Image (cartoon, rainbow, N blue to C red):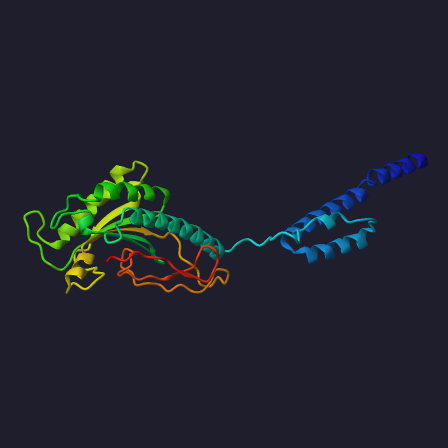
Length: 294
């Protein structure tokens, strides 16, 4: 009976022997997961401190497993903020608008249209202004004159942009009262609509959902209606490419704060104001060139 008791005690001791290495293994795994989690949340300094603590606790010789972990000092690890991303997108968009403006300016100069077509890049977007006599006969909304040459050029340049495009019609302050156009509201709106339709018809790649047409009658003048020259400037059609992004003045990497122009409800500038726009090369700012409507 005594031998049986000793054998049973020996078996109980052997059955519990695995608990010690198992508990050690679980402790090490738990410590490893805690360390990995800590590494993902900390900087290189804390990783080094953790490595030293593990080396001292477990008496590990040679280089530590954690020495090669953690962020690389030679690589930027910060996640760009929304402002950073916004300014990067703004500068990329601004570069694209600058390129469109340069192409349009080249076309204007090549075809000697300086007195009929102009461009202006502002903080709100890119404006293309076309005088009445380049597109319409007096009191008419039917496209004539230089429109057959101008429409395909403008339409082709709009293919590369994803921004909202607003086509607006404007008149002088001389009332019109014809059977087709009871007032300047109808005339300006119809001119804008016809020009927008011509742009879309000239290029199947354009997305009509991005386009809108509006008539402002005589209420968005860019010159004094008291002179014939001023009235000629006010009789126009504008193609406005509205920006998708705004420059964040709190970012110090890309120059000074931009002066915001007065805008209407649709986001279009209410007057021909030229603003200081951060250039795409990161300089403080630049006045974008415009062609005078002389």
